[in-house]
Length: 123
Image (cartoon, rainbow, N blue to C red; front, side, top):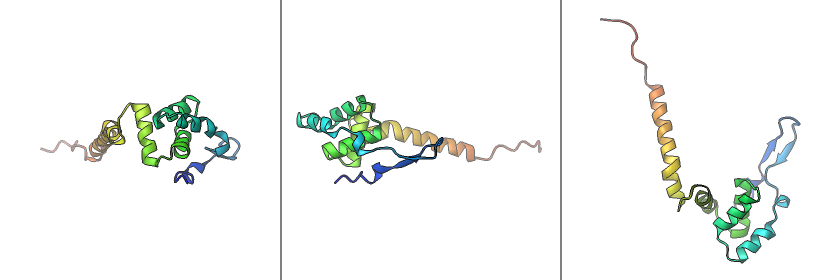
């Protein structure tokens, strides 16, 4: 059983009608198509690519990977990084994109939190 299943039943509220909609529904995904790709020997990246090309969002593609390729969340994230960012691993993706963004964010926070210079004209 997919560990992602409970997380992929997330719901969101439509702001205009106040109705709650499920973001990812099993019945909206044609798993047979992706199972046949897997049986043909396609890699998880190729399965993800096919699902993404078919218009599924990343969360739905994660669900497809979980169900069809039996991937963990970490493996699914790694496949996403390989597909979207041409990285060989999740570590490479994090080093290239996440780490610099975090570093910039912390540097900005440090700059913003430092007291401004004394603007009085004491001599």
